[in-house]
Image 1 (cartoon, one colour):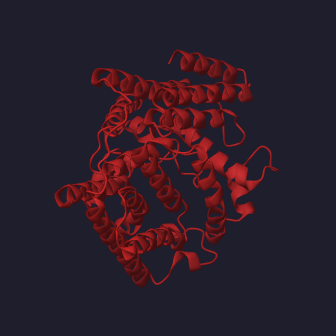
Image 2: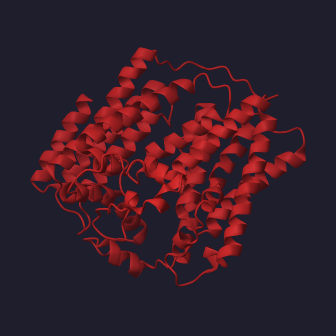
Image 3: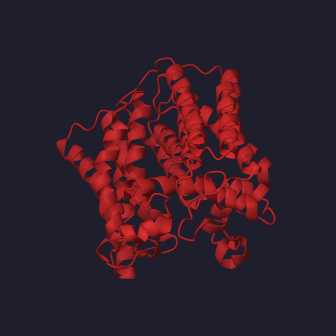
Length: 424
């Protein structure tokens, strides 16, 4: 934390003088150091604290470069919140780990006990997801991938309640990974069907024109493999990113988002930057700007209303009491609505909300890392991998104010209970 604090103070000072490249560089160095610290200590490339440190601080470093006209100097409270988010997470993880005597020994693996229940979970989830998707297609009378000239075809492809089951396909590739890591089946037919079900689960996001669901599905599968094996080749994620890039471009075109449209939104200072640089940049950096916009414009806190949105959505209360979801977002531009993990925490409780939420996340992260050492039920690694992706994409959205996140976790919990009851 000392190195991070020094780099953070330097970054703040550079930003005050308008030396934005130095400001971003200082935080980028801090992000690298924090990740290496946890990786060197654990040997785990997907260590949860390391992931959060690298991507939360690294994302802030990109934002500090100020490459877009949408960006401005941050309010001092914004700087305080960003610092406390990392500090609260990091220190809570550290202290709770010391109390629990976290260690990184080699765990025992009991393979083969869960092959059949994992396969059945994969079957059930694939059928439910595919059935929900076909129901939406019949009801709405179109497939987003086949629609032209409608930029928001995906967001409109949504039947309330049903779509949660459609997008649950993102968990199927991870189940396939667990199935084969547990030893697979002695029957070739089941092994082939496991691969087919994973492919079907990846095709659904393509048909929905959902870049995020496709990327999320692949990332969770990779993290599941890494959590189970406790090792992941450092080149795996860059290789996957390269493999996914063509699909990302195709889906961007399918969503009728051409280069002129995107460049008009991003307002990059250097208009000559290629779109494959400016688009990832703005989708990371502007989220921090949206947080600063919130700090500057928020008239009053909402004391839990925003963070309880999953309750309002999953229970249907949002339809009975629309005022529960009537609080406006504060963003730099209406088209750029993604925000950081801590946006709703500040919206509800200000700086205190950011601190408490960061500490809670640090505690859960430490618990998951420790439990991964003694995991018997393989579905437990699916909890770990989902949380890992949320930490990796902490710059992207308010994951735990999203009902879909809790739906995924609930489905994972049901599968874990089923596997415990049916193993053998």
